[in-house]
Image: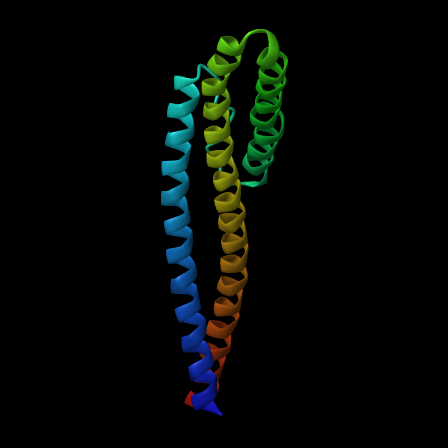
Length: 149
């Protein structure tokens, strides 16, 4: 019984280490994506509308920016291209570049959202595992005290 308990405890510690590495990797990748979003936003003269916080507010801000800023601008450019196709093909062609930039920004923001959701889930999971570890540690210390008697 003690051997199986020890095995479960070691598995928990391994899962905690794996979770910590996942959180670290996600944070690193999120920072890189945020920088790409800032650079592309500056290039296209747009506000990056992004929070640096890895929390539910930052997630909400990113989703709103993707929905309204990125998707909205793509739709607006597509409408302008559609109107200019018959009467001013040169103008229609010129609008494709900013529309492509908006698409690239949307791709980055969607990736940012996916990573942020993964980070928040990993953090929540990590908290649950840390509570399990503290509870297991308390049980181990109680058992050690009992066995000393």
